[in-house]
Length: 120
Image 1 (cartoon, one colour):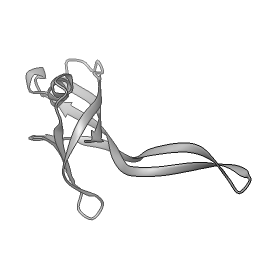
Image 2: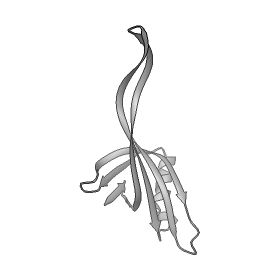
Image 3: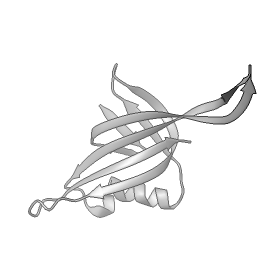
Image 4: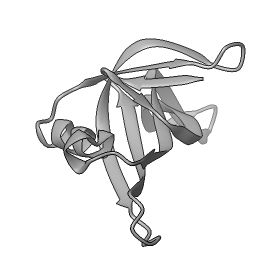
């Protein structure tokens, strides 16, 4: 089970993929009735990964790295190797969002974060 963004291997606890069409729609009159025409240019995939880090210093955090890359408007390379369940070869992506949650659980250094990627 391997999820990688650039050189980072993530500890993913939830994973989702959505396919979004890149399309144009317009109204047309055909056969004495209104119809909606649609042309699909392609499909872009969006992935949402819920991750956890434990005992990782903030300076080495994957969440910080992703925030920095997003701020730089840089693309990242995303790959998944889940055996027969799911495979994705290195795919360039834009980082759409990074959400972070740090529960106060004593003095433990546990960080939960969600990253959303869109195929470039």
